[in-house]
Length: 399
Ligand code: ADP
Image (cartoon, rainbow, N blue to C red):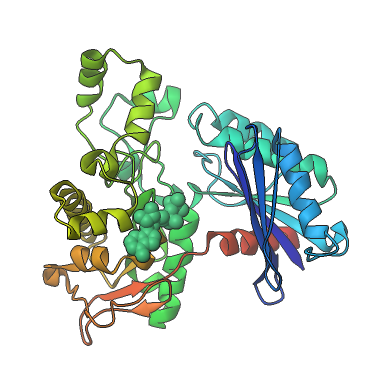
């Protein structure tokens, strides 16, 4: 069975085609700069050369068509007939309280997804456009939606409510939702496998550290806390997002700088974080290089990031009353030896002791804790696409 996974952003479409006999990737690619003057398709068949096509890609329908043409192409394609694609799994950012699991996409589900746009105006519209385009182009293929928020629907109400009047929750669904759920679900399950224990008996903290970063407390296989909130802006300081700040700063800056709510939202999402602090970059490789060369603001940004991650770990030990393992994933978590070292430093009170030698690893599964320490420190590359493909298979098979 072959399953296509689609992750649609406002001007891009990422895809992977899986062979579910062995969970292998047959091809993956990216259509970018959709709607701009010149767009680009990058298609990588797994046993063939990469193909790049540069032309105007006016909308997502055209992007879906280009992806299908690439998958079917007689030179660099990986399927002979479109009917070989048995199902499509779509990443959807926000499922609000409507979706606590992945779901087979129907007209009714599309209506509910559109209702969710009110609380996720930045993230859900491109996902919906992508699903609609794929449904138009592949009308007979079953499709599944997999939500970043779904895994966190097990958070208790005292964890997800904000200290604002209850009516705001009733009227506008204002609460914490948590994000990156597909990644946290995947790596926590993988961690249990690595530890050869049932996930039901483990307290795990998963750190998904990338351009967007979030940290989750997974107690007995269920998310009980995630550092992100109503939107992915809350939590630890990120590449360009501010993370937790005193909310009074928001109206203060708006007044001082004379900027609108929209401009302020953009500012907090795009101009802040380690980029805003360092003035150097949002990329941790650049920050680590700059810090090594004596840039004190880059050093400060890295220190803020590691310190805030430490504080989340501490608070999640309290939330779960225990800790068996912490898991590093995402671009930074999988690759930054320095950042893992900084986060694990002086954490022996929690049984966290990193093995400096074993920590010299990038992009592959590893146990980097010192032998005989209480808490295991694991590096586990995330694979949200595979998780989406697996959910898609199980829902299509049970339908
Ligand atoms: P996204 O949230 O966009 O999916 P990723 O999870 O791919 O992002 O993470 C991207 C980030 O990973 C980059 O911005 C960079 O900071 C970081 N990164 C990747 N490789 C390294 C590395 N070798 N050392 C330090 N940081 C790295």
